[in-house]
Image (cartoon, rainbow, N blue to C red; front, side, top):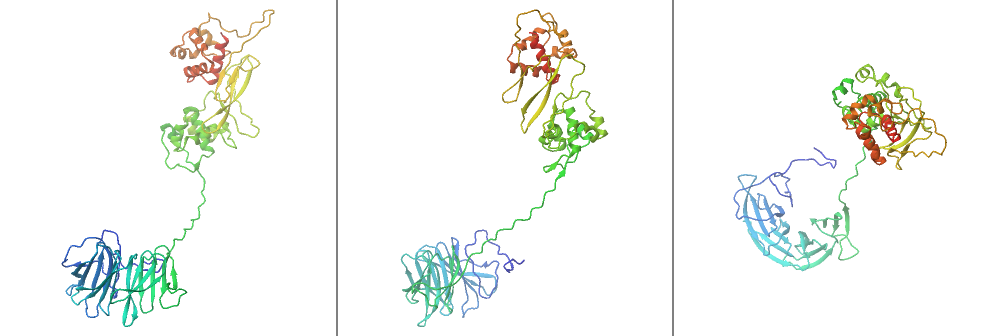
Length: 507
């Protein structure tokens, strides 16, 4: 597998479970996935914070030094019998129990440099048996060493470089006693360091600004600062390009069959983003005339009930021709849901520019009374809809009162003020007096014959005219609600309005 930066994955290091704090590689390029430790000398606690591979000129086996967060310095040596087996040959506890932050080894003199967070820099001589002999141990005030390295030769001795973590200072130490002979400044934080002593180059990792290379041999404007050779900022993620959006294609809903509606079986596959075609809208209106429920139709279609409601109310810019619904839906729906014998009392108004409304006749037989249409605006849950209610009235104005928010219709009693004069002619349909019984009253309710509904009245507890007149004593809104609650499931809205007006007129 090859990445965009031309790096190839060679393998994965396994065997550890915690976080990786530090890593190192040996000079011959060997890759060890894990190391076998034959016999540890002492149990070491704490996380490993620094690792260093060492290859001595007088030793063929590889050597590994590492330091811990508790100040332990440990030495491992490769065994002669097994190339991947190591044995622990030396463990040294530093003077102060502080985290070891840096290690560096000089192959020509077999000396090891160690620094830790307690402001201490140490030099050790590594004997042939890998035992350590301390050369010096110095403390630098107000200086937290992050790394140590061997510098260039001066007076036949290699300088020691100590790099500060927080202040960006580089102290030059004498290799014999550790005295500070000079200080350089790079500024910023120092996260890690790699030194090329022969060319005098320092590669410093600044956690905030990235990698920077400084040169010790080039001239600088200041004696205390090192000249900057090159910088390498941390790679930044490029913003992902937005994928071109594919245009959404509108699709029509799959229309259920008449058998699906009879069984109330839901149609799979319909979901958001689809629309009802002209056949589907006609099906909704045909089925709603029998069911009278938006949610049941929506459950069969597997869509939201508001889509069905809009189709039933024909709320479109280009309204459908509802008279042609049965020609569109086909014979199966015409047989399963035949055309109702009586048309609906409430007819939806078409949303044309002129606001013309389609009116349907509800009268079943001729009546001597005049007809008049009263419009009202009803505010629904989604959109406002306009409905035309046909009202029969024998007077030149409507007894219907519309509330201020256009949400309800109540009947108002008209108080007739008659001037004194000769007795007027009796109206064609005189109001029933107290002696009129309920069956007689229902036979001629302002021209309507409601006598077939007498059992319904008696089942609701209205058995006499006195029971019916009790409702008149209620307030107007409560009276309208009472009539609707008692007879709304049986009578049409037209019949309810005429019944209420006839009862009021009988008082």
